Amino acid sequence: MQCSWKAVLLLALASIAIQYTAIRTFTAKSLHTCPGLADAGLAERLCEEGPTFTYNLSRKTHILILATTRSGSSFVGQLFNQHLDVFYLFEPLYHVQNTLIPRFTQGRSPADRRVMLGASRDLLRSLYDCDLHFLENYIKPPPVNHTTDRVFRRGASRVLCSRPVCDPPGSADLVLEEGDCVRKCGLLNLTVAAEACRERSHVAIKTVRVPEVNDLRALVEDPRLNLKVIQLVRDPRGILASRSETFRDTYRLWRLWYGTGRKPYNLDVTQLTTVCEDFTPWPPALMRPSWLKGKYMLVRYEDLARNPEEDEEIYGFLDKHKVPASVRNSATRPRKLRFRLSYDIVAFAQNAQAGLAQLGYRMAASEEELKNPAISLVEERDFRPFS
Image (tube, rainbow, N blue to C red; front, side, top):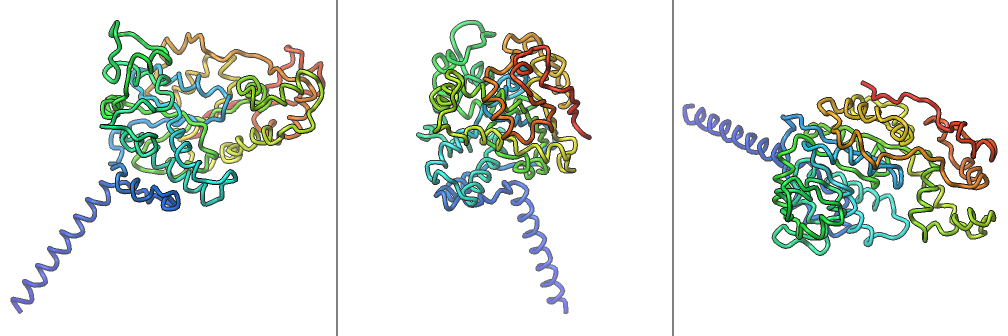
């Protein structure tokens, strides 16, 4: 009986040791499972080199600026980039897209989309944990000794263009313009950049590459993060006008319509419907699902343009922030301009936009109404964060 008792005791102690080791391993490693990456040929590399995480005991605020192209997201990004206690990254998901899309067909399947979203969420988790080395999986050509000159729009991040990450000649307080950053800073050392990230209290990331708010649910509910989502929207008519000017070759036929007054027979209407699809996040945002409670804020571009106090609303949503003077008086603040489109284009666009009224955008009933600056096409709405 004595030997049997000792055997039972030894088995119990061994079981406890095994469970303790398993718990330690589980909590130390990332919970992501690299869904679908085997099809992209990256699963083994990404999972083996995957980031490690701990629970967010410090409650560092993680900020995600969710937008669509030409909606004013660069300005909103600057609200955080100018803050000395924020580590800001401009479009890091560009690298995921640039790496994975060539492997997929033009019309990506649901499986391909899941791969993209899974990779994007894993990269966001790692970046919020200041693990910039995980980004190396998506940089081409791969960094050497954790240094690279291929980080997309590095110059848009103040931290990546100032000491100690960059040591340019001149004053210690020198703030480099985006083009000067790439030219004067040389290679980016991702290890040093990660250290600079860890020294900041908050990490902010801007992206136009997450299709829907619902795609973020896993991150919002992740206990290792304290994620707050700021979704920026803009009048789709203004987005179409801005894209037509910015991407002149791509939107050449729209500009031809505007210039001649005649709609081209081969107009690519999907360029307009894509604007509509970019706003598929509207329903969950307006329905206020419980998982977004206290985690989500909707901001209209037009409110930023006409009301500087909107900055205070955004910072208030993040609790501990105060608006820096450099942002409060920024010369880059969006200007309140009527979109430059002819009425026939506007009427065509309005017929394709089912969600205009939901966000307080009025339809122009005539050319006179469109051209009259005294008639506002933006209704007063209060989109305060829900708590």
